[in-house]
Figure (tube, rainbow, N blue to C red):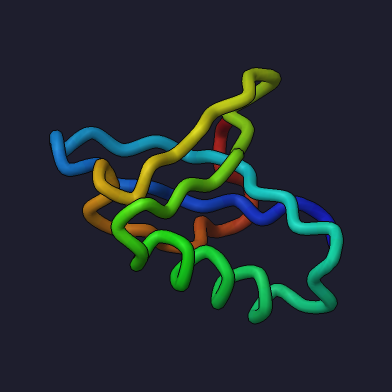
Length: 74
């Protein structure tokens, strides 16, 4: 599956759009479930992309996540 764009709000109040790729997932719903379950763990982390940069997103720094509408600027 192609990368999913997530809008992430951090506990600091800042937000950013990141792309999360999960090539083993068959659908967007599976990817969303994986993201939510990973970030609900105390030690959860996701490897994402912000533009052409690799970004590691730690669960303890995330306040909210939403699936961004198409056309988000990365």
